[in-house]
Image (tube, rainbow, N blue to C red; front, side):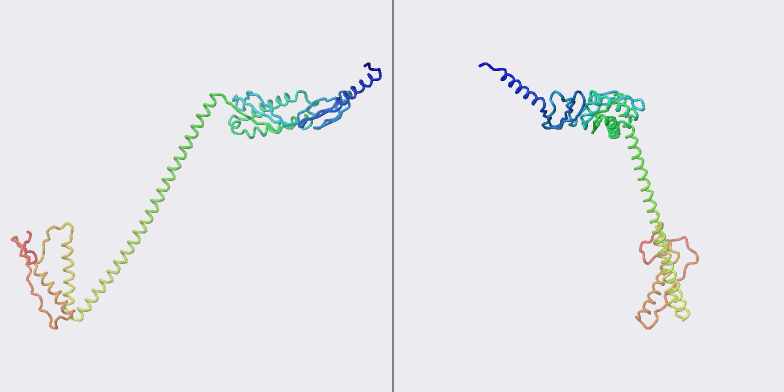
Length: 339
């Protein structure tokens, strides 16, 4: 079957229309933005979905990924403020907010962000001492984020995070830091031990002070009580003496005997209970003691009313005026006297 010229024209027109339709329909996936250029000039940005352009007049300029992306910063040498050399690497997160600016304001976007981040890492870390650098990573991250994000704003880029992954000082510097840390911990241990010893001594001194105060108060109270007891004893003695004096003044002879016998027996008890006395030398005869005891018995009988007649006076035994060298007189209370 031979095709006429009209049929060929129709077929060509149909194919051309199909090609035009395919050239004018653009499908943009989610997470991307397409820039459209008309005769090489940017006109608009296509959003995700089905879009139509003018075939052969407009074309897609750049396909920009607007999702958040990760950029690894390679390890680099940094010299700190105190002339210590350290190695540091980082990671950066960024996102394209304006596809047209990111496509036409900078060439090779990732390389530009990488070099900008590396430069600011050296600048920020180089302005800090080593100790500050190792202990303030959060401050370093904040400064880097602020500086880099401000620098990439004209490109339509938002830097969301800049993190320092690792900081590696030289090995000898690490050893020196370890020794320093050990010495610092030993110093703190000695300080704590000294403070504990001081506190213990203070507490012991406070305890001794309180003990001395309480002991002094106890001694003062005991002295006060002893003085009060002696005062009452003296009052009782004075009262007894007054009563005996009144009895003597009234003509009661037995009161004199009672008073003398009491003092006599107290003196004998004191002599016999002395701790350094093993042998007691009696300066009077034993019959004198019997006479005193007899006087005491007479007083007792008179007081308790065991007889109306007064008891006969005790037999007086003459005392020796001059002690003899011979054997001592016999003691009626001890059948075996000691010499």
